[in-house]
Image (tube, rainbow, N blue to C red; front, top):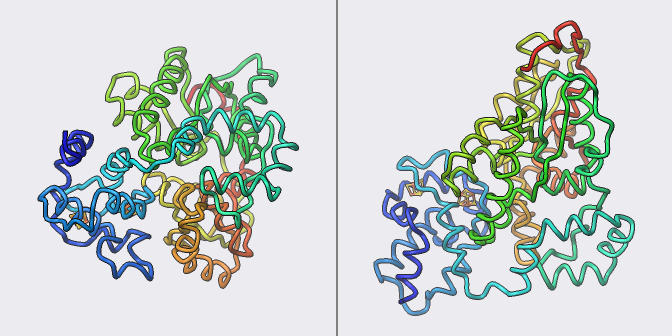
Length: 420
Ligand code: SF4
Ligand code: SF4
C-alpha cells in the first residue's frame, strides 16, 4: 500500500474534513501557532496545514515536501482546539492532525514507550516524591528528560507529591451522605498539585457527598497529541469501564481539570462511540458546575463582603470544554470583578516544555505575560499547564478558580437533604 493510501485509511472519517475547508482563514485568527514570527510561512498556520494536506492528497507537492516534512509541519499544531469554535464548515483540525501524526515514522521507539507508560511512571515517581524530585531537578535528571521526551532543560519538571488517589481511598468515609461522587483526577492533580485535589474533596464532603477515587488511568490527552491514537483508545476504554461501574452504582463523576473533563465529555465518546462512554459523559460534571448547581438551589451562598478585582484567564481547554460561562458566573457571584484576558499562554499541554518548541512557546505567551505583569492582579486559570506557564513567566499569583471562591462560601446545612 502506498504511503498516501495508508494515510487516507488512517484518517478514516476525518479524511472528508480535508475537503470541507473553504480557505476562509478564520482558524488563523485564533490559532496561537499561526500568529508568530514564523507564520509568514503559509504551512505554519492552521489553514496552511489543511491546504498542505489537500495538496498532498491531490499529488501536487514537489518531491522536497515529502511525508517527513509534512510531519514536521504538523508538529506546530498543539491541539488547543481554539479553531474548532470558529471554522464555518466544521473542519476538525486537531482530530485530523492527531491521525496524521500517528503515521510519523520518525517517532522514536523510546519516546513512544515513555508516552504510552506516562501514567504508570508518574504513579511510580509519586511513591517516592523526595527522591524523584531530587533526581528530576538534578542535572542528570534534566539531561535524561531532554534526551528521552524532549523536555527542555530550562524547565523545572513539576514536583511530585504522594498520590491524591491513595489519600482519598485511605480517608475515613462519612457514615451519612446525600450523594456519591467518583473523582476522575488526571495525572497533574493526582501526583503534583495534590493540595488542589484535597481542597476539592474536603469541600464536597462538607456539602454532604461521599467521594471515591475509582481505579483510573491518565486522561490520555498527551497520547492524542502525540498521535498515539490506539494507545489513547485503550486508556479511554479502561477509564470508561471503571467510571461506568461507578455511575451504575449511583455516583456522578466529578473533575477539576479541563483536560479530564474534555476527555470524558467529548474525547472518549468520539473515540469509543459506545453507550458506556455516552453514559459516563452525561454523568460527568466539573467541580465548578457542581458548585453552581448548589448555589442555584440555595445550598451555598457567598460572603459578599469584599469586591476584589481578579484576572480571569481564558485557557484553551476551558474554552473548548464550554465551562467558561459557569466559571465566570461563580467567580462573579462570589464578589469578584473580572478583567478577562483571552490570550494563549503557549504551553499547549506539554508542547511548550519541549526543547524544540520552547522559544516559540514563550513567544506565543509573551503578550499574555506582559499584560499580566502590567495589570499585576491575581489570576484565575482553570488549566493546570497554563498555571505552570504563567507561574514560570510572570510575577503574578495564579490559582484554580475554586481556590478564589472557597473561603467566601457559606453552606446552608438545612438544605443538605437531597442529591443535586
Ligand atoms: S488546535 Fe490549536 S494549534 Fe492546532 S490548528 Fe487549531 S488553533 Fe491551531
Ligand atoms: S476556518 Fe475552517 S474552512 Fe476556514 S481556513 Fe480554517 S479549516 Fe479552512
